[in-house]
Picture 1 (cartoon, one colour):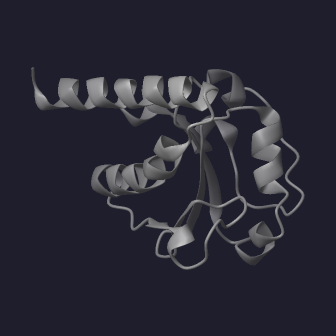
Picture 2 (tube, rainbow, N blue to C red):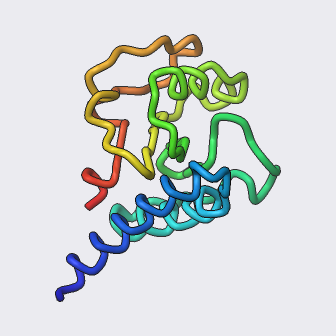
Length: 139
């Protein structure tokens, strides 16, 4: 098995476990996924993502932030229009209005979300076709 196949297998396994444990309301993998995806995206794209919860616990609407590249990212196992719009509606988004908002679906395919239009009350940069990421797009 080559390295990329190994990574794909592990991401698929993580997504399956997040879904299975989520149904039981065991959410520890959701929290660990924030750090995992920060590390993975930093390695893949040379970003400088940090967990937003490291400076303030349970930041609403933002899980990862990259001040150098001006990204804020919501990492979620819930990939619904309502979840994205809820994140876009947070007051904290106003403070980062010059950033780009990205949504990472850690457990499910997000093709449907990329086709939708979203209420974006604070006008943050957000293009669903480019800024909604799922495990298929990360691989």
